[in-house]
Image (cartoon, rainbow, N blue to C red; front, side, top):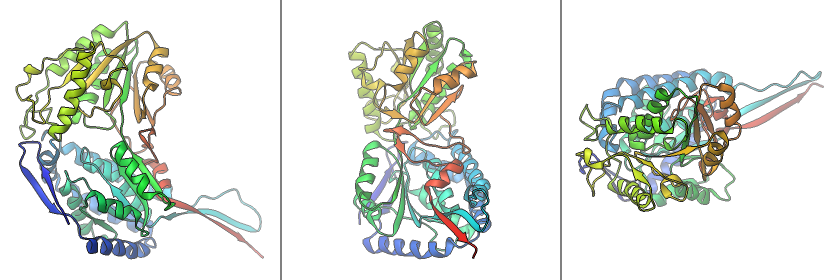
Length: 461
């Protein structure tokens, strides 16, 4: 066993400390989960829906406490942290509501003398590895459809957000979910790989970095199980000449700065039609300069620290390299009194005169930094948007829906937005291409990854 510490980015204190699970505890959890799933899979879908709904009720009742814990664990401003509980509820209730249809038998056309249908069967034990940046929103994407489909779940949360796993455990236990159907483990990296390699596990859902996804694939190699990977992003936005400019300025800025840019689908690079470039840049610069960087437990703060000093230093390094290569910074870091080297408090930045030779325009930053490039029109914007190893989301700002669809058909991405960004609609499939991963969560399609088809071919004699 080892000790995991959550060092709060608020003030550098140890906020939570937990022992990792022992080898015996891990094996007992796996055995319990496998046994519980055999009973849970035979529980009617309506009963699964009811129990999961009760868990959501219980979870939401503790919204204030959960939000405060979130602020101290990963630095989300207290004014914004309750929104994660609301987002959790929205996604969970949607998946509960659509479970009947999503899990219903698929029936081909009638054929005389035969009864034929395809049934969706659960996979068994689903191991979910969740990150710290949106700890409830990322985990619920897999937890709810997995349970509703008749799987049991073992959740491993980030060492930065251990209380999130415990809060979810509390909610499911109090809702009356049968023992063993939902469990959590605090694990180190080596033991995480051990669980992935266990013959008890039938599916792994991972959200995190590209190197983390590579680890999951290596650990699962040769097991012939499904692996869902929701990895990084370097998501672009394109502002066309016909865009509602004020809406684009406000939406893109929020998409880049919310959660201090620590989102896989945050806007990190922006391409703007040259005709409106100057006005857009001026509007974004004024808006970003008005942000208040400070302690996230201050209700007036709308930009908190990054999760760790090392994360802030990584972003600082990208900015410094870009400036040395000819980029211009439009935000004066000295305007933000909380900004300080050697701390996770990082001033937001808007960069112009950038290009794709700079890491800040090609490598995931995961911080409050936005690079903006003028373009001559759709063709150049499409080329630059696709010039990335990632493909999670992309957005266009325009008043021409037909043009948006045409451009979207040419963009290599999992989700294509028009006039919005940085949002997950639970009715739509959440997926990525290229190094943003593979697999799918949310929507009716999300249930397909967490079930296997079984065909019934019955002949009347």
